[in-house]
Image 1 (tube, rainbow, N blue to C red):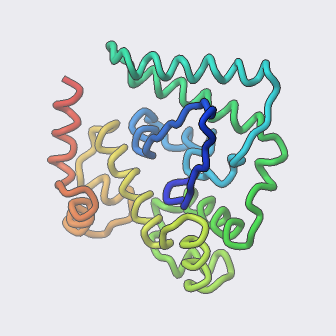
Image 2 (image 1 turned 90 degrees about the vertical axis):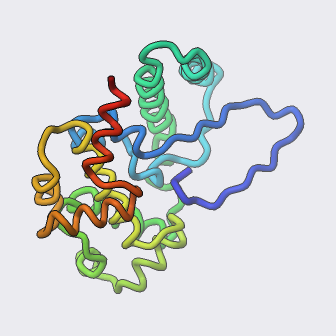
Image 3 (image 1 turned 30 degrees about the horizontal axis):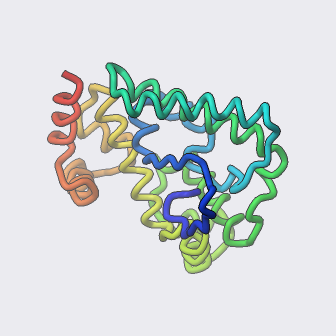
Amino acid sequence: MAPGQIHDFALSEDTVGHAISFSSEFFAFKVQNRHSQTEIPVYDFERIPNTVYMSDAQAQDLHHVLDGIDAEYQGEEAGYEDVIWSYLRILLIKSVRLGGDAVTDVNSSRSVLLSRRFKSLLEKHFTTVHDVARYACLLNVTERALNDATRQALGSTAAKLIRERVMLEAKRLLLHSEVNVAEIATQLAFDDPAYFSRCFRKHTGRSPIDFRRSLEKLSI
């Protein structure tokens, strides 16, 4: 399920399965090259089918991956988060493979299709374009139509999705690079480093420098 997607489960008493929740940051913080993040749909969950039917052999294959995640999560041994990240990446790739043609056909409503096009453009241009109006123009729709679509399909406004993606990249750069805050601001198309810092603090509750220091402490 995509972040913010409204959902509910009606489970029978004999239901057996796994539920895994993870944040976009969990992926971004493990990836040093942002372009490699597009290899699997971490930021485009609409491409992953909601339901996948599989053979016993395919189910057993995924069970091995899920059991591996559970063992690492419960054990919390050295490097367990890295191992979980690798298992989770494998799980997503295998899910996309199993989905087959359903990946392109699932949820083909207008709102979902427009949101999917927006997310694709956002991933290409978020380092230079932060304006909802510009994305709406590229998609040949009104700002209102774009926001209505993202609210319905993703549970969020287009502006919020843009901010979240920009701030996620800022966090990744603070972790995986040694460039200073002013350079990061420039890379993300902020003319004023001070304004970038204010936006970052508003989003995370701390300054970019404090955020980087907190990550350095965790890695010691």
